[in-house]
Amino acid sequence: MAVVLLPVVVGVITWWARDRDRMYGAGLALLATIALAPVVQPWYLVWPLAMFAVSTVDSPWFVPLVVVASFVELPDGNGFSRLVQIPGSFAMAAFVVWFAVRGPAKV
Image 1 (spheres, rainbow, N blue to C red):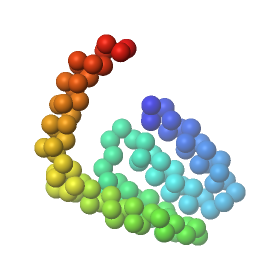
Image 2: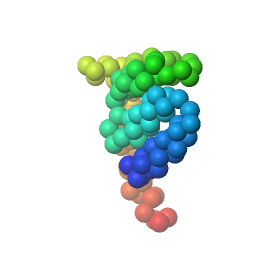
Image 3: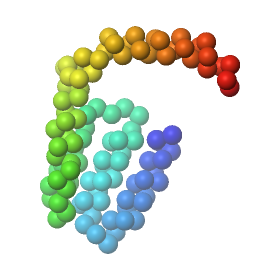
Image 4: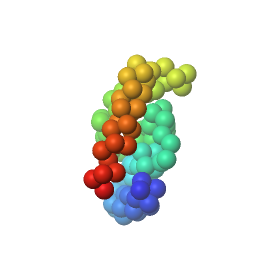
C-alpha cells in the first residue's frame, strides 16, 4: 500500500514545493520516500538533514525526531526493540492463535 502511495505523496510534495524552497521540498520528498519504503531503519532519517540544513525553512521538529528514532534501533541490534523483543514475540504468538480461532469465523 505504501509503495503505491509513495508516488502520490512525492508528487504532492513536488507540486507544493514548486513555488517555495525547493531544497526543503526535496528533504520532505526524501523523508516521505524513507517513511514509505518497504524497509526502514531509523538512522535513514539522518539523510534528509543535509537538505534541511541548506534550506531556508526552519524545521525544529525534525532534529528531535532523528535523535529519538536513532535510539529506537541501533546498527548493532541494541536499542528499544531489544527490550520488547521477547514480550512482543509472546504477544504476536497469542495474536496469531487468537486470529486462527476467532478471525476467520467473522470473515
